[in-house]
View 1: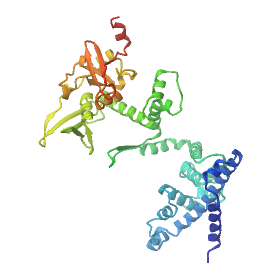
View 2: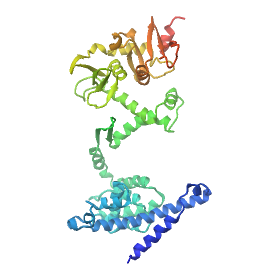
View 3: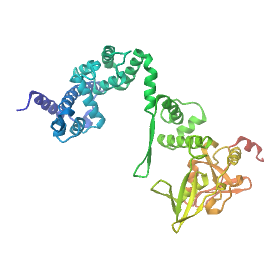
View 4: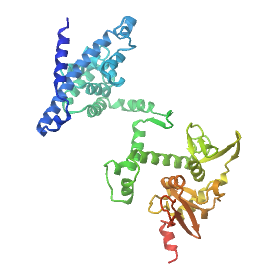
Length: 440
């Protein structure tokens, strides 16, 4: 015989499944009706959250560690109660852990008595699970200066305030309240967050790599400022009446690609300016192993094109190693690269990227050999070098645009598929001084 609780759940599930799930029906609602349904949705989620906490808490209680294999979770084939909940709901590991954690409060957690008001608010169906978790995380643990009874009063205050706050704002409010109660403990909590900082680099099997950076608040403030300055005009942030804001807003790259390129440039420039924190000196460099018409970046498993190899040779960020017959026969020389003084001269002459219509400043550019070092036997002379931003440097090599020099003038010739007549286009300097010195 089903229990009374099971009967109630069966009735509730049947009622929910009877509600139409046709998008057309919802599109025909009036604004007032849609707002009422939104309110019903919130009430429904809080009610489901209360039942979820009670069920998850009881599953946890019957799966206690001391019960071993006879505990509910392990006897059902799961290692932990969180795994059982996750399997039953199809949710994430985080969702399951949250349900079990709040479920313990709903059943009266002896380890966290100061959060008893939170458990009561959940079962009274006015506090969502995420909000309950926010209060617990934000308030932290009792100390000699903030004992259990003080934290319990704070928890009750936050449960009352939660009626007008979402889970994210409630977490910030809980942290602020903890700081108000325990100003003396701020340095300790700051140091605890700083101790959790870390950066990890992962190579993915699909050829991409991922960087995960856990930042303490101070680091996040600095990095966040750089990120905002690089992407704000693209994300609907402050717009300043300046060429830089317009340039960022109109950049053809996605916001994520733009941010990636900006941080790559800053890392490279910073390492070049001061390598005291690194092994070796100078900007980051990589080895490219070349064999036949393509190459491999050292430490990476995916081949790169001959055009990429040539571009890296040109930009000076690589030490090329040519492989023939299984042996390296040609290791790149330092003279292949433009020196710091030559870069200064190029910046003064070109004023930035010289690709027609591009307004990237010198700091965003790479020095390009107009006569390729490997293909043409080009020289690392200022006259035969030109500044191109990374985008146009890539375009030049990958799409086979050619740059030629006639005295002090530089010309860009498109590939035949872009212009069958391959008519050269002028590449004027964007340096105000050079334009002033140019003959009439």
